[in-house]
Length: 448
Image (tube, rainbow, N blue to C red):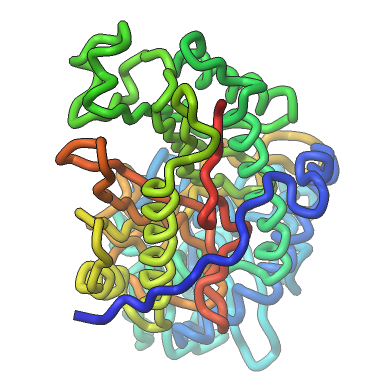
């Protein structure tokens, strides 16, 4: 097993950083304009790059490939379609003026004359274009697409399934996006820090349901959305479970679940799994607060120590992210790390964050109704999407909800210990894993 290198944590998490991220949330108009600019730049810079990486000369996308993916929206097609259906982000041929109907086919050609965007009218025109450009390799979605696959194959070219190419297009981020997402993660951190404070939680009065709805309301006030209802759980010492009025049945292995409404009490650990929408990114924040017992002035040292070790193991897992490894290989390497004393279990979970490329058009009309999740994951899948895989390999400039679930022992917390999984958005770049705004580096949120 690999030896875990123990490091000393430096400093802690500041909810607002140097200045409040919440105060920097762009207006809705600015968000739409920023995302439209990113979309154009991705088509100009990322699309040719990933096609060349996959050695694809022509990519043909059909407008009803949706069932191959999830939520019946077809995120690959939707993300490639021009906002005005005119293809202004790329040099184009055969794009009818004044087109209103959604085109049946999109075609991207990497030719000697440059990179082109085409909207073929039908199968016959596609075959004519194939004969004109004479590509060596063509990518086509294989789902329910036998006629197109067969017709193009008969032209003497190699035809491959476009699944990997579509994932590479969706998962690859511009450097500008990655930098902007630091702000998004900071906003999420600030909202959680506010929720995990005495401004919101009154021990003995505030319930987990109260905290859930406060988070929903706070997001609305800031012009943000939640993809899912926040998950709030309470971990309680065995000796305190009988002390308070909440039913003991709500604490399975000392932890309440999503369906349980319990009152937050002194001595509890309060855990959150929540997300926000901003600039096309859906965050995935797993953080923890400790509610001081009567007479306590600070978080007990054993809990500080356990959080420090969780951070160290998370960093060790981060070092296993190496370009070209599959999600399964990374998860396996993490499971073989030597754990420090006090560790009971770790599940090195990670998955691409839910995203959308453009939610609205410049004119304000809603364009994308759903998020997509595309890329490499640690597990067998990410229900209900089929555009993630633990066999997909790690590439540069990709994003992950990095959320190793850790279980550690601590005096007084029983044989099941406590769950201190951390979750935040990270980017994988040439420098390795980049925490875009690390949420809890050796720092507990404290409620008094």
